[in-house]
Length: 157
Image (tube, rainbow, N blue to C red; front, side, top):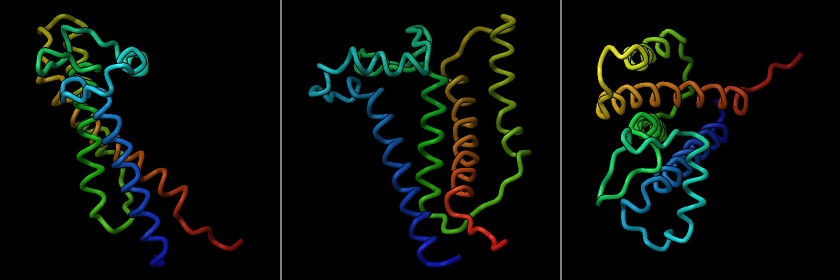
């Protein structure tokens, strides 16, 4: 791989990391005491309602303020965030087989299925953990797909 391709790949990964950081700060802003964002709270709530049901009984809280996404979505976003941080330092292109994605999706599928059929009661920590596994795996596959489109050298025809 050319040096410029490596630099572009790393820059792209850093950009995704910062976008995920902004996204996470957005749903945690009031919990973190970022009060200057308080006037934007109704707008933030609308934005995050497009990606999460925002059920208060299924959301974590800190400083007596609920996250703007549920525990499962929080886990998904934190999983993607941690994966993005780790992959900034991974210099090479990676080819992954979908078997890993399927394997890391099994816990969230089991969790949702058991909840749907009322086999066990909702647990925020279990949902966050299964979301974390799923989010970290999905991020890696999405990143790999985007990088394949953007940074794979085209063969001459």
